[in-house]
Image (cartoon, rainbow, N blue to C red; front, side):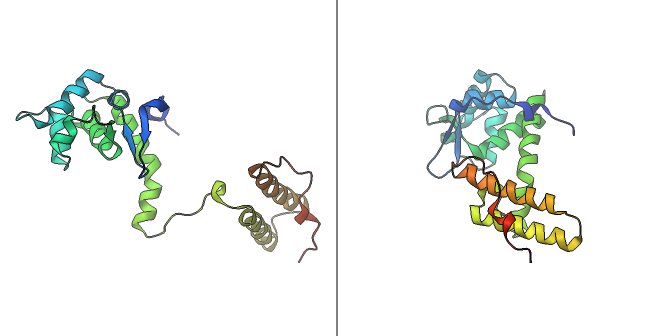
Length: 192
């Protein structure tokens, strides 16, 4: 699979602040790095948002509905809101007189990550729990259902069944801080 510049971008955790509502604020320094532009150029652009002849990036943010007053003060008020980041990346990666390959790469990487969530939301499928979000009982039940399905299809032997159940139980034990178990207790139950 091809990779793009944005997928290998180094993030400095100190440049991203999570807000009480779960959204992020991004420092101008981090946003400039993500866009592959000079920090002072981005700062200058954002500060121009209230001016009659605002610079192109600030003008595009205002056209997207961001308040010119807010945009011009993002550097003083905790950073750029996450919902502005795609527009900044779009400007520098696509619409700028000399598009930034870094901005385009980061924008594409964000699209790749978000497409699944976007489609699920639009299709009304909601969030499907990931393995890391499953509780111990849920994971063991999932392992049992998987083994039962594979048994019906004739594609799993007893050794593979034991390994699958062991993996599920070991995962649950590690999540609970109990380390790895020697054998899964489910493996000794009578087969149905």
